[in-house]
Length: 296
Ligand code: GUN
Image 1 (cartoon, helix red, strand yellow):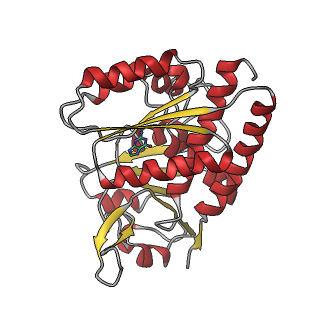
Image 2 (tube, helix red, strand yellow):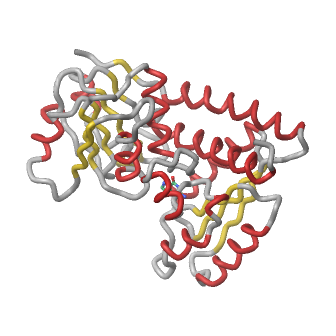
Image 3 (cartoon, helix red, strand yellow):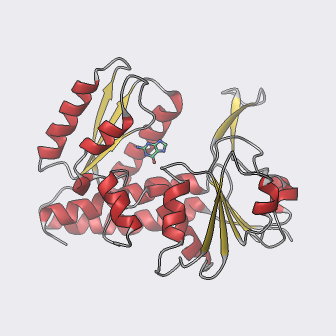
């Protein structure tokens, strides 16, 4: 089999078109949706992600407040900014780009964001609500975006075996929660595998749907995938490439060429999951703006 490519760029564009219509409606009702974004430090990948998030906000008409703080900013100062954004009625969504510098406690920061403004869906109140089946909870953008991708290609995971490789709070765990929900485009049988799993290949070969989010290239190779599997690659890794002007290229966690020989569908990197994450962030922001302004 040779896989069909899941065009994350096109699907994300469709999501953003819908968000832009919602933004226009809100603006007509006198509400300007606004996402406040905080970046602490100089992590080059984070700078790129934050830049893309803000560019996409502009495209759909969401106002972005951009706060860049030096890497040595005290935690107290970060929390004080969050308090002011929590209180500010003009701010509807809040995002603190991760990872944070070592001296800052991520948990304390995440918990300080008002759950109603938690555009990333990382606050424990939203995590807990989602886990208990409350569909109004803000969901983390990457797994939510993957579910939308599956919808767009018409792949219903109901009854299928979804294997998720990676147990991060940003992708793996919430992906398992979403795919095991009793709701459309979920109802899967879910396995979470991770860096400590014995014989990873024996587990991934059992997958109908394989979602890989571990953070290193070639974590899943052709011999680890069965014919016809739907493969979603969440990884974004820089590998040296002298033929590129910038000296590197981006690859996923999946050995694309060999896995594409066997998969039925596969996401490319770049142009797969990445654009979906941002599109869902915009969607969460507009949902927050609707709710907070009473226009939902
Ligand atoms: N770092 C990596 N992914 C994400 C994300 O989805 N949101 C935030 N805030 N930080 C990240």
